[in-house]
Image (cartoon, rainbow, N blue to C red):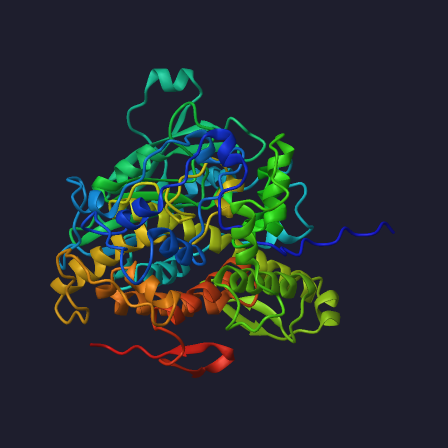
Amino acid sequence: MPKQPRACQHTTLQLEPSACAARVGFTPTAATELLAAAELSGETHHDGVVGTAEAVVKELSAFFPAPLILPGDELAYEPTEEGQSCHEWLHETERNQPMAKRGTLYVASVPRIDPEVKHVETWTRPGAAAARKTPPGDASLLQPPQAEDIIDFLSAFYHGVPVKPFPQQLRFVAWDGETDREDVRNGMSYIGLATTRDNNCTRIRARTSPDGEVFPKQLNLEDILDAGIEMLPGDAYALLLLVDHDLYESDEDDFCCGRAYGGSRVCVVQTARYHPALDAHAGIDAAHMWPTSHCKTYLDKLCRAEGISVASGGGRGSAAAAAAGGSSSSSSSSKPPLRAAVDAAVQAAQGSLTGKTSTVATTSGSGTPAAGAVSQADQEAMGRPSPAQRQRQQQQQGLWLSRLARTTAHELGHCFGMDHCVYYACLMQSTASMAEDVRQPPYLCPVCLNKVAHAVAGELLPGTRGGKMRKMQQPQKKKAATTRGGSRDVLRAAEAPETTDYLIQRYAAIADFCGKWAPHVGMFAGYRAWALARIDSLQGGSSRRSPEGPEGRQVIIILDD
């Protein structure tokens, strides 16, 4: 039997862009501009005892590394793209300010398929050729992520904003209205997207997929978004539409995973392309999805494959990478945040692959982890998957959810008025491929985070009856923070201290959600470890943290003002 290759140990983690950045002409944003971009006033006041802007950004990089900039990444194609600062976002005329009477996020479940168009269900199944490298039995057992789980995630991610199911069940129905001769000549067909209450029906174009081996047909996302605009509830801040079908936007597109009409407060995200069965087809390296995407060995390998020279050591990037690495044997409290996230993700992946559990994990109808114990002998006798297969299935189910969750938060971010981010590795980055998509983080960088914090803690909650958050003051010049407490004080100074309570509660909600999936999903395990480290930093240490709660989860004590 051939010797199996040794799994990557992710020994060194990189905080700065890869060697590809210099090749394509990407210039990282200067430290003073990074700090100014995170301020609503557009100004930064980094002088004094906290040191230089470079020192502050260096401290921030432990949590918020720079974008990776790998060959084929969006910023490698568009290296001069400009970012949107907090000041620019605040004064954007097309930004919709959330308010009590229009502050709810609605999530519409995947449309049901009427019997008369039952054939469109086959359009959601990955083609055999594209999914041929999937482990036997996995693909057929997976079910698309459920809206209930997405609602739970978004409730944590946009903590403080009500997130509710859309009150109507959408349906795909036969279209018996007008047709376009040009569409018919081009092989286009139609289905209808109908609501249950008012009987409105919107024509949705369907075309043959350019890469037909993946999915046979695709739906036009512009038509779906037009339908969303028509059905937007009066009290909605935004509406998210989920579909299980592959999507496209223009004739030139191969596919599109999601799109938002931010000014119109609607967005649509598909589940289809995130199916784990398509990973090999999409060129996804399962061992190097976030947070392990910051593995220096992996980044250097991708650069060398494109003929890009990689420095052997001694440069600024190498020093930053080494500083981020930490030791896998270090105690969790002493690990750098990214190292803690990587170790948690690796542990979750190893547990799911080896089946190191005493029971066979299952999921409830909503996809929430549950547990049940069935012996392997009984499983085999009944012709059911073995415990190892079921464990693998749950891991794949959670993996699918983690990918969809990221993109739903991203598209809703556009509804909050946020443009694509170029400042840091960030959930609001643009992406050029599925491989790049899974390398990006699930968190918001300091710039994008302060936008959401102001929209929620500064605009929405103060106007809501019973809101507990202090109203954010108008941007003003801040006194320099003291150096006592090291990087923790620097981080608080750079992140709008008047919203610290909101940020802590938000991270606690995220950690709680991720904890439900962390035992077997690397992204959620890593995000939980990262969020707990952020809480510790914002609280100035462990003085406000209680002992560990049930199942080893730390319970965060929030002190309301």
